Length: 233
Image (cartoon, rainbow, N blue to C red; front, side, top):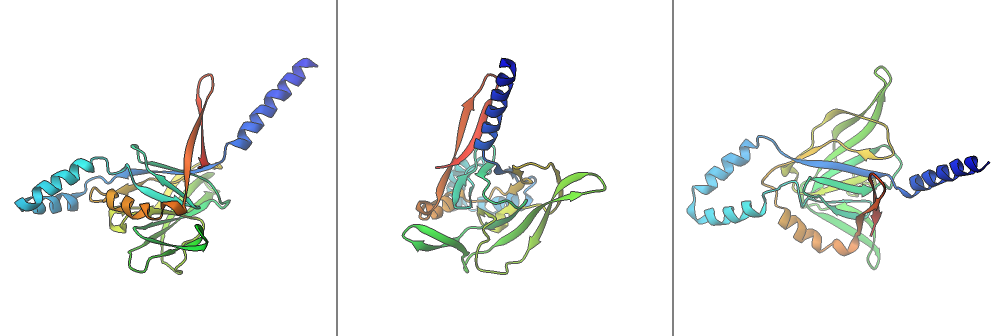
């Protein structure tokens, strides 16, 4: 009898861990390979001696383009780490997300610092993508289908993950990427060009940071591994 109670206790603990571990949405930002346009622009600028020192300082401060990219989703604000990873707690059920790239947003407040919704800034360029998880019965495989869509409303969708950057500096590959079914949405990689300016983007979002929650990463040590959980701060 004791052995059955012991097994039942272990099962309950495992279930409790799964309940506490919220599903996540994550993606990796990679350096854009073979950025020839950027290289040519840099060569042209460096011919002007007055701009040489300025460009040197800029390049020193921007060695790791995939780090420091700001994104927001479901009222949370996150910054990509040195590996280019961004993680959010998943707050919607549908296996799709709207990926938006723009460097300006307009928060519409309801009461004090409570944001009712976000709107697109009419003065800023916007790129919109629909990232939807689908299933192919013929090959028995789940996959991501990434398509470019047009803006049909001034309101940012609730299922949107917004990358704060000028759209010309972020490359989102469209098409099919294989994946597996999971409560966690692991989105396809996107690519960022070296000409991105994370400092300007950070200074802009600093004015709006008080309107967003900070999602934080918590770790729990076990015998042979660490458990990771994303929570709202």
